[in-house]
Each structure stands twice: as structure tokens, then as C-alpha cells.
Length: 189
Image 1 (cartoon, helix red, strand yellow):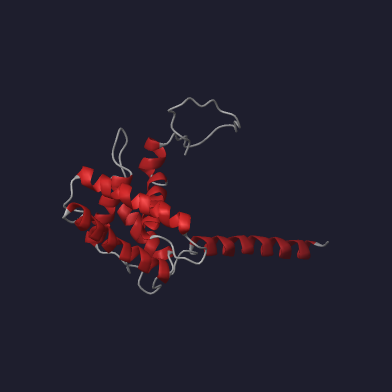
Image 2 (spheres, rainbow, N blue to C red):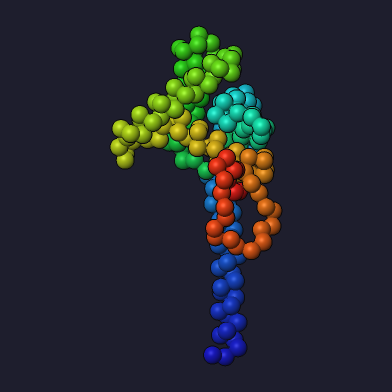
């Protein structure tokens, strides 16, 4: 092989890497490309999602989902990464949570106490489990399942979740395949 062919192949490989990286980084953009400020959710809805997420992942000895700004994370994910049918399910789900709260507690989710919210979220989780058990492959996702998944993803990929709720080493050393685990230890980030 001569030098010219070798350089052409290296350029092809490196060019593919750069193009592939760009596609990877922009792969979740389904929203309007001409207006990056397009958002499906308003400030009130993001605050609502922060409260729902905080009920799912409350503040304990570590900060909760609200401190990790999970509502804003959900807004970005739903706007940029969800297909229209899933966006509709998610958006309709916000109203369904409030309706369920009014039915169960006689008031909106935002006006409910922490214990009333917890009871409601536990009930929605039971409904989700029953739905998933009876779900057929062609059935759409359950709205609470989408919200719960985004809450967990948003929390554990945030700085707060990764460094305070999980054990974290910024620059790990050598690989250790078998690390002793004691009951009650935090998982690794």
C-alpha cells in the first residue's frame, strides 16, 4: 500500500468519526431547528413536574429531584427527544395527575399536602404496574411510566444525583471487577 492510499483511508476513518460524533450529539433534536427556544412546557408545568418528581424522589439525607431541576430536564427531553405520540401522552398525563388528585384529595396536586401527594403517587404507581402487566406490545406507554422514568433518569444523571445520592469518583483509577459491598452502601455512579 502506498502513502496516498493510506492517507485517504485515514482521512475517511477520521472524517467518519467526526461526522458520526456530530450525528450522535444532534440525534435527539426533533423540535423546530429554526427556533431552539421552542418548548412544550410552560414555567407552571415545569414547576408542577418538579413537585411530582420531588414526590417520587424526595429530599432525605440527600437533595431531592426538585433540587436537581428534574422538571427542566423533563421539558428538554420531551421537547427534543420524544415522538409526537409520546409527547401527547406525556402532556395529557399532567392533566390526569391533577384530575386524580382532585378526585382523591378534593384539591389540585399543587395544593395537596406532602402526604396526600405521596398517597396519590403510590396509587398511580399501582395503576402503572397493572397497566404494564396487561399491556400488549402495540399499546402506548403509560403517562406515569414516562414521568417516572424521566424523573429517575434526570435525577441520577444530574450532578446532585451522581455525586450525592450515588458514590462517585471523578477520575477512577484501576479497574476492580469485584468490590466489597456492604448492605446500605450507595451504588456507584
